Length: 270
Image 1 (cartoon, rainbow, N blue to C red):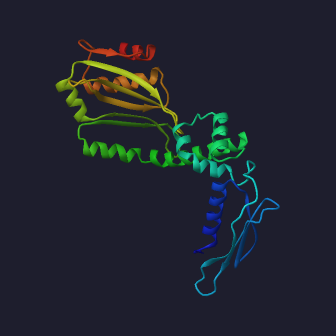
Image 2: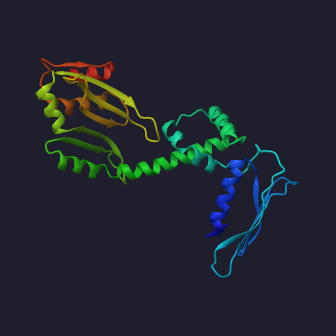
Image 3: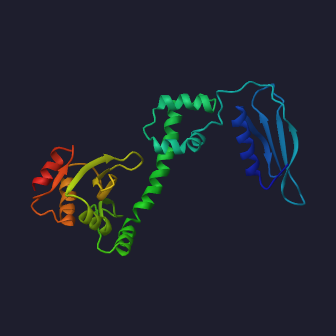
């Protein structure tokens, strides 16, 4: 077996150790040789990799592939970074994942007794990665606004940012596409459902939306907004833009349905 570099060999041995629930150490390494040995004192498992002089590749020269040791729950190879890599998608989808439940899953699937502090570090690694990615996406919101207005002429796309902050921090965004607005006016009754829901993930905030049922009894989205939090100020802002887009006027003949109580009631009264 040949490897193009020492790093790939170490990665392969580590993956093997994790799958077999063993602890393997890398010992006596130099620029031309890498030795891996089982951590269990009496276990004969050993592997030696040597660099060839002709091709400059790495050749497996010794492998005693026999383990005489039990599976290890105290596996130091199960690091917070490897836990983060294995469960990244689940943590992103469930940022509130209970640490006790996470500990039980890691114990069952990775056969390792991970401490609560290690699990916290694993979750933090994932969330920091998501946050860094989200920052890059939010920086593109103004380009997104311009593209929506270019591809959907007549639409309303409002992006507000926090005052006095550099670099800019997005405060809220409102979108009402012209095609949806025209479709609502042409084929829907003047009945609007208003609701809001919190985001789950690395970014906080809330989605406010105006929807209704169309002639096919399907959900028809009229307008939506992303805001920092649900309060009177945000509902006032959302309802003001929505009223202008739909030409609600004094509200005569319109019906708004919601369970948001005070926030929307105050906005409608204004």
